[in-house]
Length: 58
Image (cartoon, rainbow, N blue to C red; front, side, top):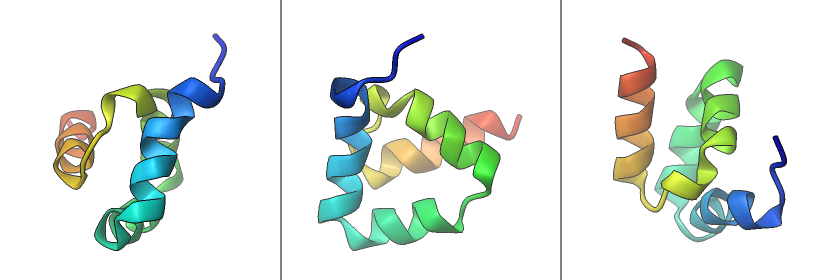
């Protein structure tokens, strides 16, 4: 599977403009960060990140 710029831009843009989202992301474990990078096109807000992390823990 290809994870090109388009897919990572959503997450990277969020992390660059929202310090709370960046702090939350950096506090996650390596596995959670990797999962979010793989699904970065689905992340548009800190709430999206929290929801995704909760879903991954089940």
